[in-house]
Length: 125
Image 1 (cartoon, rainbow, N blue to C red):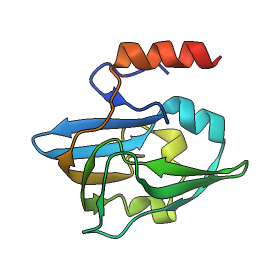
Image 2: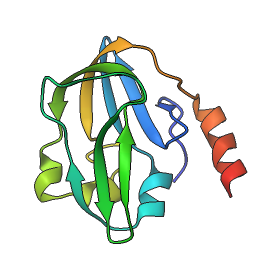
Image 3: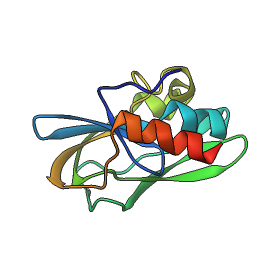
Image 4: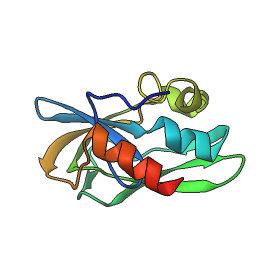
């Protein structure tokens, strides 16, 4: 899967789509491939606030548990509760139905453009 050009990325393989003041966050296709089959997602409580770079939860796969990091600072306004019963949505559609949470943005993060993220992936190979 190619890297969607309309999103921003982190060095820890989260993606973010910012619309108005709400950031939708998930993990990249590369991250879900590295993890393998996702079996559990630890989601934060609504109303919880995070600074950019804070761990906000974890994704557990058959291979490993990986912390999730906030690409931007903000307050949780929605979590994808569908992942509680169907965590495999992250594997099936990481940029769509596999989104993890939405934050009301209050702080900037260290975000990469799609082109910079593609360079990072090439360097990691």
